[in-house]
Amino acid sequence: MFLAGLFSGIVIFGLLILFVFPKLMFIVSESKYDMDKTAELITESVNEHNWSLPHQYDLQQILAGKGFEVKPVKVYSVCKPNIAFRVLGESSIQHLSAIMPCRISIYEKANGKTYISRMNASLIARLLGGKAASVMVEAGQGSEEILKAVVKL
Image (cartoon, rainbow, N blue to C red; front, top):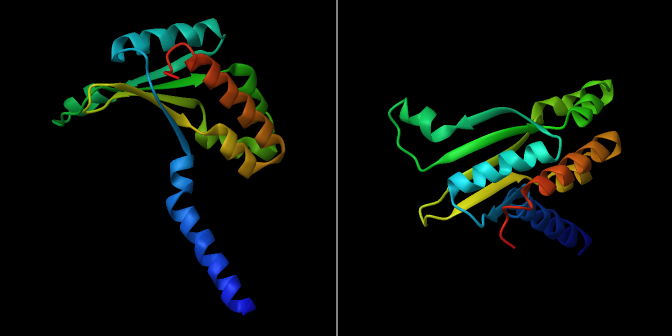
């Protein structure tokens, strides 16, 4: 009986990881505005919160140059220098550089509405623990503050 319960628990846990966890990895919110206004307000908010915007990718334009047509998609790489320094200056958590800087994606779906997606930094923080967790929580909270002006509640 014990082995059957253990096996059932492992199977259920595996199914949760397979089907539920991937949906929790990202936060997706509808914007209150169209694509252009959302992009404009996010750019302003990045500056107002003393973050930087080192790179912007217009994926629609990039793919059009390769012969593919997609709806508008922009990806912003946003960075808070003091948070980046805490990661890059600490050997034990430098591996987090693989997910730096924070990314904010703005895209239009077939329904014509604009959406914003980003990594669920709070969830990732819980998985990482330690120094990495505190940095991820701070970065995630900062990203959410940036998006408050555009996210539809």
